[in-house]
Image 1: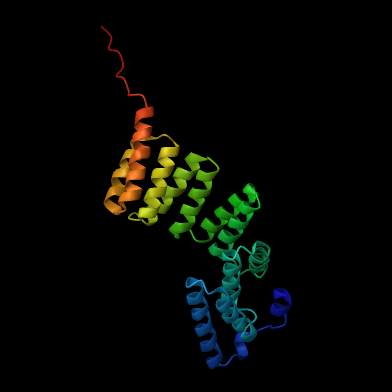
Image 2 (image 1 turned 90 degrees about the horizontal axis):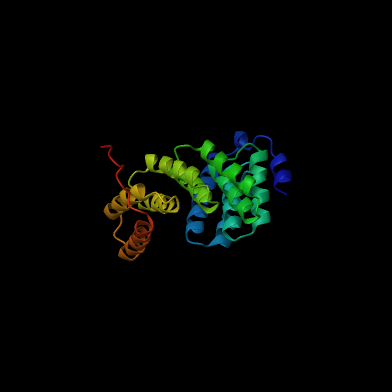
Length: 220
């Protein structure tokens, strides 16, 4: 359906009145706001109205894909995202959406490939590195997870969310020294005492299970 709509218009912007362009901007803004408010049906109507005015408006397709994904309508979301790739309008959010769908389908190699594409599409977007780190953490590839979360923190050094993810990865790797350093950084960034105590307990457990380092024997 999307493809037929798209092909019917060759150069919509060329003949589009300024008032129509402004209307599209308004509808897209309203759609994004409605998605944030979880009013998905109203948001979808805004995006469909945009496509009625301009069937090549990629932001409307991206918005519709996001709505389908949030509603767990995975086949429809996948079709929308794959259409964006076909029309060469995919961005990091497109690949991130496809990664989420692939993981749900159990296609882990495809999920990894899409996570990597999302990072490549927007390497300065910290959340894409963090999502890749979370993926590697979940499939127990801890060293790769550490590399990815480090890149996220290189971009957003003061993010409590990414620091917490880095701590979770350090604990999974049983890297006590790094876990302690990351825990201390998190104390400066977050005032959530409940979560803070939960991390303290996990760190204590790791400390108790880690044998103390003994100094090497000196030769006499």
